Image (cartoon, rainbow, N blue to C red; front, side, top):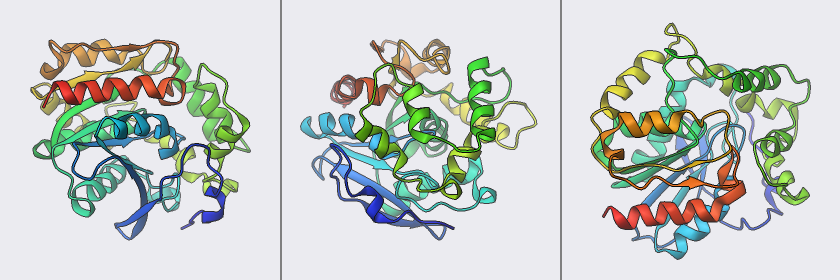
Length: 295
C-alpha cells in the first residue's frame, strides 16, 4: 500500500483547503470541505483519473451560497491511500464512500453529486441508502449494468489507460476538457502520482465498469436501477454539451427516474467530459440553485 508524500501537494493553484482524513476498511481516505458547518450538505464525488482538486471551482460557489461542500478523494486517488490492484472492486469503492460519508462523517439529507466514476459510485450509494440522501445530481455519468454496449471512445480510453507504458494523468484530464489547462493545473492533477506504481487506481478503474451481464457488479447495479426507477426525490441532470462518453445517458436518466420529471435540467455549454474543470462555476451555480429550489 502506498501513500503520496504531502510535499507533492504543497503548491496547488486555487486549492488551499486543509485536508482531513478518516479510516475506512483500514485505509486512509482524504477529503476536503468548504462552506458553513450548518449548511445543507453536498457530497462531491470525482471520477477517473482525477481527484477532489477537480471540484475547486464548484466548492467556491457552493460555499458562497451557504452550502457545505464535502469532496473526498476516492481510494487510489488524491491524498487517499493507494492499495494494490486486488483491493479495487466496484463494491469496495461503493463501501469506502459509504463508510466515509455515513459512518465517519455521519452525513444526512445529503445531495450526492457524481461525475464519471463518481456517479457510478454515488448512484449506488444513494440507491442503497436512500434514507440518507435528499437529492441527486448526475453530471456526465451513468449507471451501466452490462446490458448495453459502451461507446467506441470509451473502449479507446480503456485500452490506452491499460496499455500505456507511462500513464500521463494530466494529459488524460486535459484530453477530456474543451479548454486548455495551465501547466500549474496540469501538475496538480499529476501530484498524487509521483511514479507509475502509484497509478494502480487510475489503471484499474476502467476495467471495473460492467460491460456484460456476467460482470460481478451487474446484480448490484440492476438492483440500484430498481430503486432509481421509483426515485421520487429531486434528481438533476447537469451534463455538458461536449461529452462523447456519457452524453447519451442524460435523456435516459431524465426519462427513467421519476424525480427528474418537471426539473429544469441545464446543459453546461462549452464543456467537455470534465465539466468541473471547464465550467466549474456554472456547475456550482446549478447545484446551488437546485438545492435552494428543492428544500
